[in-house]
Amino acid sequence: MPEPTPVSPVEGRFRFGRALFVLIEIALLTAVPVLAFFGFSRLLQSTAGEFVVTPGPEDPGWQAFVDPTPVLAVIEMRASSVTGVALLIGSGGGAGGAVLLIPGSMLVTDTPLAEQAPDKVVASLETLLKLRIHSMVIADRQAWEEVLGGSEIEVENPDPIEGPDGEVLSVGELLLSAKTIPSFLGSPSGNADVLGLEFRRAILWTAMLQRLPAAEELETAGSEAQTAPADVADPSYLSLQLRQLSTG
Image (cartoon, rainbow, N blue to C red; front, side, top):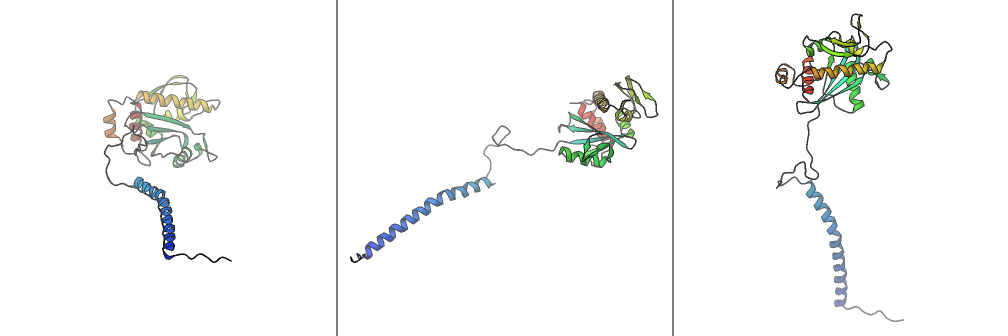
């Protein structure tokens, strides 16, 4: 049996040094991507320094904080019942916007809006539409008096409907006052046509926006009205919002 070849001290140190060099090289090669990953992550999270060029909307990945779009819920009432909701959505720039009409017959959690209290109506619409309604106005006779200022508004009535005192509001050109607007918005026609009711709502809101000239009167109206929305806004705030929408 052959005897093992003895290893000299010099050769042993050489083998140990070569093995150590290989291990160090492997460690360095492994550390490069790890250090690059942590360094790049730290760079992305860093807020130090300053921009040489201020980024703008046309730059890739540009983001900015924007103010929420103001939304006013107008709860249309006849007597003590909700007949519909009009969402007044501002442009955020002080003029222009949109009006979204929601029927009182809309079911939310198996309950029509017409059978809910005004504050519950707002909460239901926020959940359904997934938006923040900043304020609401109860559109009763008092609110319409604030908007119309004692005057009347002319509309084309498509259906004979019952007025507030039991009289019939006839088909054709019709002058609506603060007293008769709730009946015009909330009375079904003789055949209980819900679509006819919604058509009348669209007629009135269109006429309302066309009737209120706001460009030259907006500053005066704004100085007299409530300018900051609240959970339950004053009727004067509705008047101001309508004038702002009509300028668009």
